[in-house]
Length: 86
Image 1 (tube, rainbow, N blue to C red):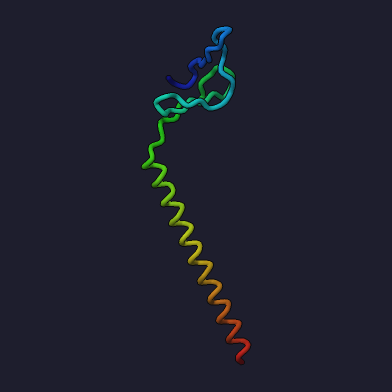
Image 2: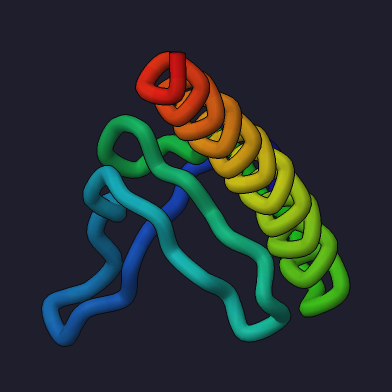
């Protein structure tokens, strides 16, 4: 299936144009319908490996940010202690 293709849903009354939204197929692909009955995009199945890689990247960014904040707090505390001691 490719973008621009018609996408219908089978109902007891017959086939009707699929409303806008995302639909997951049995094979894991996602069909994105932007306007009734017209396929806007087909997203490939997201593997567990890809999800884990994304999580690891986010965790690395979070660790770096946390370390920067800790460093800033430590410097500020040292400066305050130094100023009080003078």
